[in-house]
Length: 239
Image 1 (cartoon, rainbow, N blue to C red):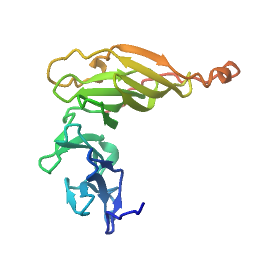
Image 2 (image 1 turned 30 degrees about the vertical axis):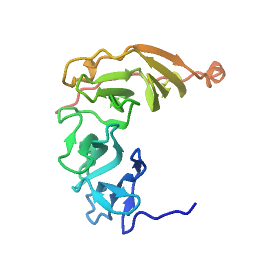
Image 3 (image 1 turned 90 degrees about the vertical axis):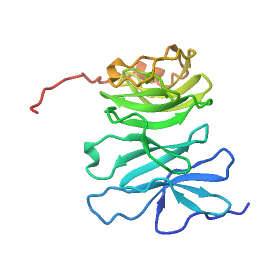
Image 4 (image 1 turned 30 degrees about the horizontal axis):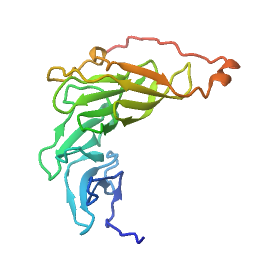
């Protein structure tokens, strides 16, 4: 078929996603920064595929990227960070009405961790995302109808990617003792909790379910190798 150009201008366009009817594309665009202290400034846009008309959903000084439309079609969720003093801040998971309006911080100001790549489950009931805490990379989820934030996968290792299918989450996982393998967790049905997200990562509950490791690619290799394992050390520093 014939390709159709949708964008013009001196912008770089980031990751995009489609609306379910394939009539609208959501993306981020960034101009050329002139301030040496600004890492990147990008906004969330939506583009009408037929007309090419572009509409800004965000227009600020932050780095907004990776937009995805909610299952109910009412919100566009995206990642965001302030574009100055980047390493003194955390990543934020935001949302904005699909036709523009007030931007909301999904996890709230008191959530003091970096959320990672996110996706919705098939029903749109949950928002799943990566979460970093004390050297661990885990998977968490938040009920979109109100409820308690909870871990889906939490081990002494790193989840490097995941995908949802029904009540299963398949993910790649690695640790100092075991180089990367593929696992799947079958999650038990939800028991609806009270409204309000738990803030402390140490207090987050774990979604019950059964975990199965699907691959053992490094089994033979590890029989002939002795890995150098890290040791956790805590050091007090002056404030």
